[in-house]
Image (cartoon, rainbow over all chains, first blue to last red; front, top):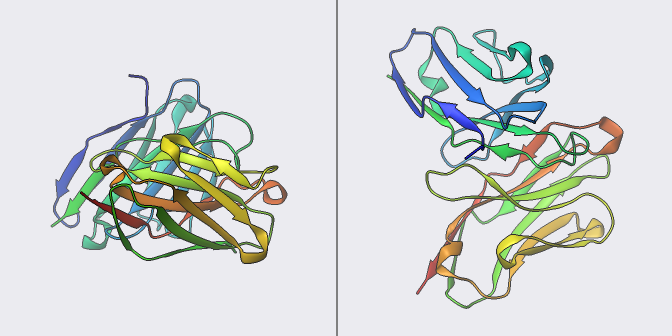
Amino acid sequence: DTGVSQNPRHKITKRGQNVTFRCDPISEHNRLYWYRQTLGQGPEFLTYFQNEAQLEKSRLLSDRFSAERPKGSFSTLEIQRTEQGDSAMYLCASSGEGTPSTDTQYFGPGTRLTVL
Amino acid sequence: AQSVTQLGSHVSVSEGALVLLRCNYSSSVPPYLFWYVQYPNQGLQLLLKYTTGATLVKGINGFEAEFKKSETSFHLTKPSAHMSDAAEYFCAVSGGRRTGGFKTIFGAGTRLFVKA
């Protein structure tokens, strides 16, 4: 299967700890997105990469959040000094057809973060 | 700014009955519109999308949606529900050509229940 993969699938951490999630996109896709989804809500856009360049970052992303995509391949999302409000499902998606606004985003299964 | 409103957080239909999931959007530019489905413990999957051209869009699994600019709507329908259609459905809008928009805004989702 060559879909989008995310690791870990589940992460439980204590408030104040740092966590890092990884996303491996579909290999030929040059665009990568991060979203956050809380219970009962749709995914909320966090950030977007085209190749290794981070082109957009939501105001939802505080200074405690950082994302990287070295070499335009996999991406990591790090949350520093986690808070209980960070508990959510973190989704990664990739795309690579057509224009950014029309192409199909392929989503990974997500990483569920629980902050105690 | 763009936004999406999905009317009804839960919809219940009998097997074989018509499925109608409602979506209204707000956009200052011609929108690109999407419907995604999320099965339990799986990533979001694209059902269909409208970019330009024919306003009636056909997707996978027998679903279709019609873009109605005058009503700012993009409702999702399926003539006959199947038990396997039970899932969460998300309507989404992206920025369109004028903004080069890669930021996708999702609705809160509608959970579809199918009764035997």
